[in-house]
Amino acid sequence: MYLGIDLGSSGVKLLLLDERQQPQSTADAALAQHRPQPTWSEQHPADWLAALERAVAQLRAQAPAAWRQIRGIGLSGQMHGAVLLGAQEQVLRPAILWNDGRAAAECAALERAVPAARQITGNRAMPGFTAPKLLWLRTHEPALFAQIRRVLLPKDWLRLQLTGQAVSDMSDASGTLWLDVGARAWSDPLLQACGLERAHMPALAEGSARAGVLRDDVARRWGLPAGVLLAAGAGDNAASAVGVGARTAGQGFVSLGTSGVVFRVTQSFAPAAERAVHAFAHALPQRWHQMAVMLSAASAFGWVTRLTGPGDEAQRSAAVGAMAQTRQAQAPLFLPYLSGERTPHNDPAASGVFMGLRPGHDATDLAYAVMEGVGFGLLDGLNAIREAGTGDADADTALALVGGGARSDPWAQLLASALGCPLQRPQGAHAAAALGAARLAAMACGGDEAQWCQPLPADARFTPQAAQQALLAERYARFVALYPALQSQFRAPAPGTA
Image 1 (cartoon, rainbow, N blue to C red):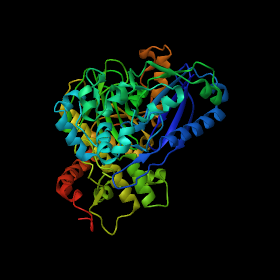
Image 2: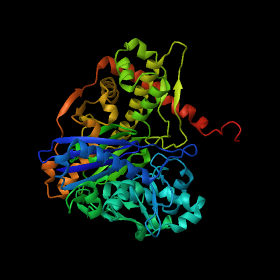
Image 3: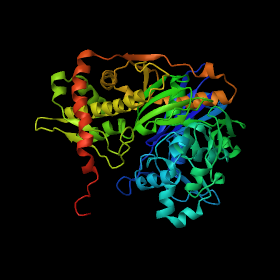
Image 4: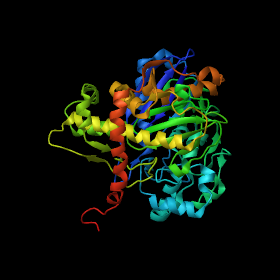
């Protein structure tokens, strides 16, 4: 039995996987994000550990016999977060998260300091990445910066608590801007530009490699045998790729999680930084991937549901599914930049916008607009990957659809038509990252990659529909005109702050 732990920004999810690769049970515990200032986003690592303990208690109660058979644990986690530790491994401040936008100025400073940064890391410097956050701290919290002895990513801080070992994997480390992604090793020039050195960094391992043993006291508390192994694991998207079996060039997925992602595996390191496409190491040895990211996806649909309540997300989705196409054509347009944006705009100042509101619009119209706007944001990302032209896959190759938003059939169908490619929703798509983490644990315990990284059977397939494509093409043309028209306004000072 193998345990997958997925530390997301909205919660911790656990999944138990048996030797036949069948999920046996899942559990989850919610987390809150804290926004002490506009564009900031933080969580305290202690809250992650508390949520993990709650989820463990759930899973033990649900499947006590299976729980006791756990041989290995894999970790998946939200990327880019900066966990800062002092000389006694104590947490020095709340972690700054992936969707925090405070370090925009530091991105330019980092690229000036290391002109080859994009070639080394495969990425443009963006505020969400870890390195600019440390530059911001060096300027704005210098006394705290001087105390830093180690910097860890969120899932790797959990590993430290569970094993006492400071280790990261290649996929998660790719999101720091301190990794030489082609060489799969820390970059001394980029560390030095941030006032750091390799001693501040965890050891590196491939995601399917062994990276620690569960501490005896944790094993006793959790009711597990001694000697449970931990895999190095993966950043959440690389873990999802392992979960859906995306292991060879051209395979990939679309994720409707808190953020939105288009992910394709590449056989080699293939940077496309000019379009704000990420080029990261995969969690599997000697493979890489390209990834387009938007910062608000399913979280935007949750937001509009709460805003227009009563009713839950399933009810809003059903209402959108019942809309006539003539009504969809009259819906407002929505820019889904509630937390700024990455691909292709790389603009932390961008914000959400409804355009074209009329008195007759209601909650369903707004819900449709958000679904569509997220779809258009993902299309922006897919187009950027297509333009990069790695040649690893046909642009219209079917992609898996994962994440919490994948539960919505109307949204899945809209995405297939908007993206212009078939989408297959795997069984258990909402827990792909936790499943991938469990699969990596099985590999760390000696399992063969080809056996443990097979594609999941699909529970539904969505293909582009001609009439819907025609409508979306017309609306997409209007959508892409909105950002450049409004870009200067995103940077205008708020009233009373000029």
